[in-house]
Length: 529
Image (cartoon, rainbow, N blue to C red; front, side):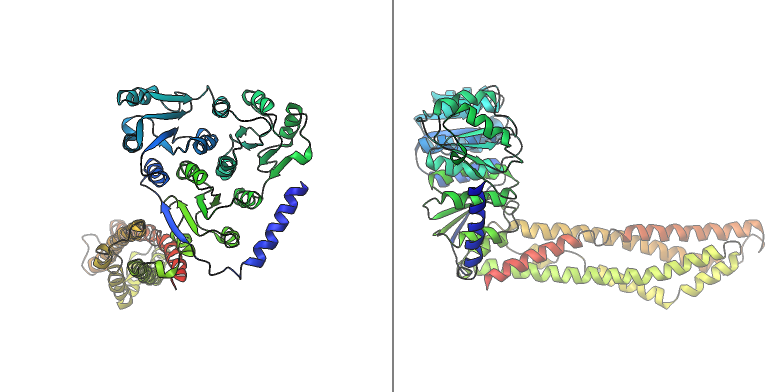
């Protein structure tokens, strides 16, 4: 505990002191991503090695423990980690990478049992001429963990890592590349008890030290007692817990504690494991720490990074994993293309225009709601006297009412996707920003059309009531039939009012999304200066 506390205190002092000195540090930034986790794993593997390789590791893209505990295997065999989908047909990108890069005499290591990677894949690869296929798997994740570690022939007294492999992936991800770089096997555990499958393996290794990753909320004190029973030479000084208040602080504290000698840091999303799985192999090869972010905020991580000797930053995943302002915060503004800057500025102006237009429409609707409320009040107060009700409606159906409708129609016409946006060319990697904007505006345009239709119906109903009330009724005035006729028309107006009120509530439903996009664009623009 003292080690943890001293680590956290020291790191906070370093961070505070370095913010000003390194505020303008810039890096060589690259982003590795694909349309899905499988294409992302291929793109990461292409950066791992674009030539011929002798070993490749295959893991399921549906779960995380097998791939994370296999990071040390990747380091030993200089092998990329590729993710597979449920079937061979759904995994063509990863399979094509193997075909194009793995020598026919090379080895395919499969992590997990047939429930993770099916035998169909094994048969398919054998039919292609790959005969060296080794499955490292068991009946559950703990047994698979044991089999992977045993396949590496870990020397006695090698330090080991313990992390929770059942209640989340973040801590295992943060330690994976560092453990691989140092040759420390990772053992996964539940919170309160070590899986029986791994106990003998830990005893046989007889580790000189144990690194527990995560607080007692994920790896309880019960685990410490079990470790001492399994390895009697372990005492408190040799069981080191590296943790933080959350997964992001834990990730930072891991990087601070182990201090890998490297020029590269890898940034991954702390809530979306698939993009990062294949990245563990690349990180292990580069001796690089994996530092987690929530995808939106990078300030504390950047403060630490700026104190290190990193020159390269690798982002794992697209904008849905790590947003573009984070990328720009690391980049040299001079290396941001003019096309990117123009794209950001055009989208930013479009967001401003659309927010202004929807605001004006909302105000117009608010002004109109007063008229509708007054009409409805008049109808309710004079429900038993049709003639006064009609007169009250006539009084409110004035130039103000008509002008309001005309104003609303003009404003509503401005809510739509302009030709400039439709024809705007998106720089590579930023296509989703334009798509986000167009989708939000199209929804608002649809909402506006519904309001316009309901508004027209309401105007027509009121106009019809006033017009018809000027002509003689087929029923005697004051008769029950006459009153019912007028009442029915009034109810039509009331229905129109409620329809309009209902549709009006939807206008601005996308305003929050447009505002968020604007804020992201503004944040990115700050880093372009």
